[in-house]
Image 1 (cartoon, rainbow, N blue to C red):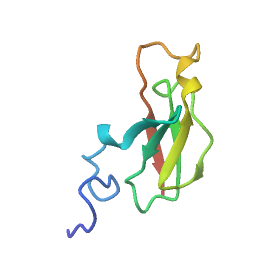
Image 2: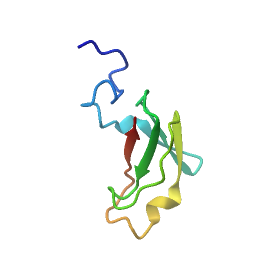
Image 3: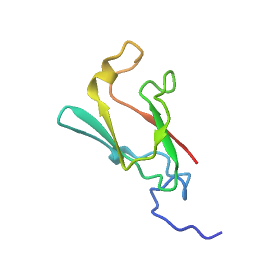
Image 4: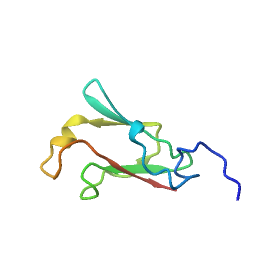
Length: 87
């Protein structure tokens, strides 16, 4: 098997499914920089899969309002997101 793509692309290297540097904060909102080039759409959960956003077309960067992490659905401290990709 020959793989072509960056080592952070989970489409090419599924074991690269955790990327702490892809998550950022600027101007009152969080950003997630996607690395799954080749995916058709994405969605994310802010409470470990209890709730999910709608599927949206894949984009380079997703902007996330910081108020989502103050929801009553969150059962931990901190800001975490889980991202799923659809092919």
